[in-house]
Image (cartoon, rainbow, N blue to C red; front, side, top):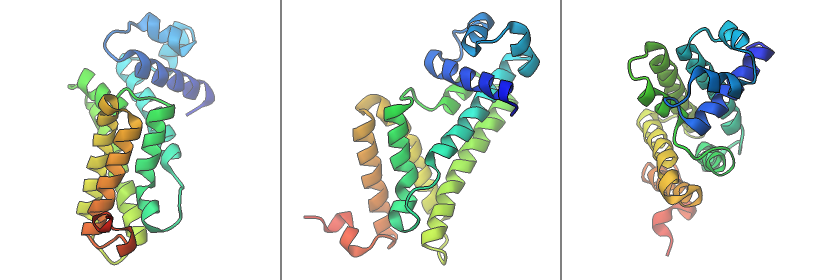
Length: 193
């Protein structure tokens, strides 16, 4: 994205995260984007495109947030869950922006496509991390399970707080990895006394 478009998308991301999707008129979005109405419509000609732009910005920001971490071992696999916990503590704990957008615009093919792309990319990130630590295993179902823990963590943090939800999700992920033989015996939560 060009710098002006990127700045508008970042501001729309913040605006939608803080205020939701349904309640804001175009003037509120323009004000939140901190541009003229003409400039807003130049880069995002419709409300749907504003939502997609905000989601695309969030996708890039979130994947930057969860990238990296420990290079090897189970902590490499669990790192996105840990970083999600950090996100929920430091950035936003208002549920998943992508799912909130889909709930607000269930009939929008463009928004649905953007949400599905993000979620598929996230599941694939778990698959890649698992493949890194267990290259000889088919870890597709395990990646799906870790993805579901990620999604559950996002929603549970709203009810129980980010710290408790993150600890629970990581504990469940470690138990899952242990049940698949991917956790060294010394780290197996079932062996803790």
